Length: 480
Image (tube, rainbow, N blue to C red; front, side, top):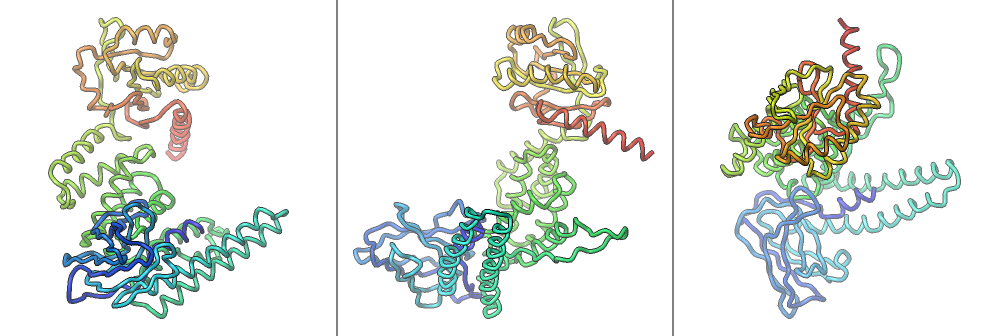
């Protein structure tokens, strides 16, 4: 609840329709500040960063005017003192012309707006939140003194009752002011109310999965994707993050489908589409979930390469395309590219395809890599304790030309049984490109047909992955 309060305590209010003049004219007067540089900034999708739009210096009376005739998107903006001694949020719409008088040391209690402004409603809400938050935290503090489950339950009941006050305030405002931007902001942070009654399945049991399905289905119901002003708030990225990480099944097919749905909702909206595609691209590219790079490739091929990211230049586009091309040959489910490597003697070629095993752990490592020095011996111990029974072999590639160190490490750590040690002294295999080896160790799991079943794994999760694959095999046999 604290997080919700902090997010909503930013700035919400009435958004006017088109005005005669583009830009803004905002007169400010601080009762207790003078000769200070103040920035006008806007949020963009999240509350951790603001972007500067304008700056003025207060005169010796604490007065200044922010003025621009350039069209703006509108949304939640911030007045920020250059020395970061104070800041305040407000709603600004394109064409706004209003005045503000305020005391820097007591902003939310003293702010007064004149002219055509939407901020009086916001500050009414802000003052409500101040009192509400204090009372909520007081109740929450009672949990520390609860001596029994009954006591704790009583506190949680009080918190639920208190929470209804916040919901009621927003509902009351929205009912009285249905066409305001603040109403849209309240809708944007609204969460679906899950029905208390669970539907009955054909076998007579209650459907325990229904609450999650209902919540996901209605998650975006009240969010207005057709209003770009919502991108200029700290709301959107948090909602996207929660949706993608908590509600979407973390497999490429599901993620790709959800990406398409979100991008369809924002299609035609300059800021909304741009932010959504940027976020989803970053989310899929940096995800720690194995195999999610497939969704990244999907976005590049279906959006960037089709000219839909019109805001990026050719150099940036080429970076995305190159990254997708680097990933494409080594995605999960793809046949592993064959490698013709030399053994430690340099006299014998050992193709990757020649390894006979139920599972092949393909490791690109370096004797100078600190993490490799820890990971490789741990894999060997795991092999002797667990992996050997699954008919696992290692095809371990020296990723650097440190032949003497490589051989010494193998010998000192007794990496014999189960290990096939190879390298590419003449660098003719192009393994870094085929397997996207930009750091070491880089590890893949291949099945008996040399199809990639896992990537970017380590000794901590390899056993679980193999056990899951073995279970899947047994289930498939039963179904035949």
